[in-house]
Image (cartoon, rainbow, N blue to C red; front, side, top):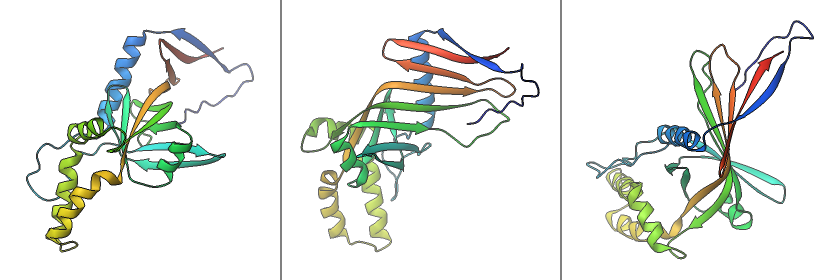
Length: 217
């Protein structure tokens, strides 16, 4: 999001101001934003196909040996924790070598209304059926991914992409093919843009929250 202010006089500029704000209130605001933007479980499926209620995607940033990678991907959340189901690929390989990650969550800019976006800087933990089967299966059910996977395979059978026998084999093998990516935040920046006003940047770190704003001189 970009806020532009025309400057017609060299004396007309702005300065940043920082003010401590309530950590609890900022955490509540971030959770409300994440709840609004994240995927939701679709309950027990009633027909073939994925039944997850999809939210906005995020951009997951990983980096190894100064080679950054950004992956657009769906996400879930539980409070301030972001959960991503990750199939094998570059993002998983990068996290195994460097668990420091960043996440961007946003929507297309619309200058006619209030909008927020969120940057998360944190630590990614990989959870799978080998290293933590109880936690892995708990999240599979909690976020409705078990129902979604079964529904997708039923859809593949219906379209004759796979056979019923292949579906049964895949349902057994599928959990071992991906990881949960659990992202624990160490810093978050919530940008709040209000039409006709300077943007507000709210910065959260464990035990601390400040709001950074701009004022005209």
